[in-house]
Amino acid sequence: MDKVALRCLLRERRARIKPESHGLSRPTRQGRRAPGLSQAQIDQLLHRAPDTYGRLESGRYANPPVGLLQDVARLFGMDEQEWIALYRYALGQDPPYPLNSRSGEEIPGAWQAALDAFSHMAYINDRSWNLLAHNAPFEAFFPRREVPANTMRWMAVEPEARTVLTDWETAWAPMLLPQLRVALAADPGDRTLRGIVRDVLADPVAAAVYESASCRIRLDGDERPVHHAELGPGWVTMCAAQPLAAPGARMVLLNFHPGERRRGRVPALRAPADV
Image (cartoon, rainbow, N blue to C red; front, side, top):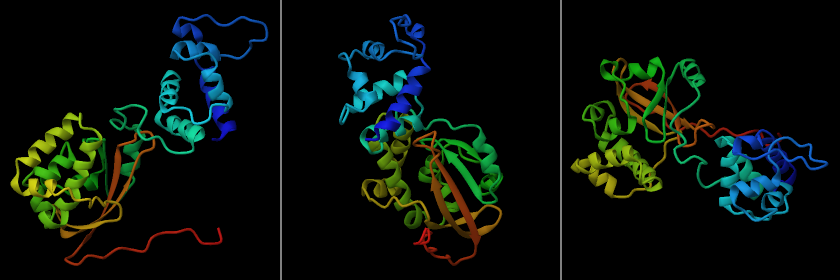
């Protein structure tokens, strides 16, 4: 627990909330000068015992329950990055799930300009693989420049994908379909994922791979064969990242190089030992 950082974060966020916005009056007792909700008012709003929130903010609450942290974060209107910080300060680890169960469905608009700056193919999809943004090189990858609305659905079940993603059955499906299975296990109520899985199971070839329950879900740094719509046969090396404001969303860079031979993995990047 980082008591100092926890106290600073909670005090700052608490000060932004006017008691009147929750139907409460501003405390007027002598010595009360701090802006925002009082600690007692937070206990009242969260239906907690007196001094529950006070113990949390002061760092006197060892190992606070996840439910309390979640309730406080939602009351304070925290975003996903603040939620991660709160959890780390209070419990010394990352939260097991996003604050908002539908997090990862949108990204800041500034990401489009960032994607446009890449010379390589680049795109961002949401937590269900719906395409949120992409650049022109990514568009040129597809026949007729028709970019799919959902990248996983296209890769997993569309016949066209099996001509673009070379050696689909051996080089692509064993990596793609386990990702889909893992995502559905994490969120079985996601209608988009359930629909894709339903289509996968209706395809005998895809279903066999999906039902094998492989754990081969490597993506970052992997190299796979493709047939680029404009540049012909070659390979793409993938780099994946996650926008911090949208847990579950994915940014993927695809570095294409033409030819029949793969380049192979490049050495990992590490900081010098004396840094």
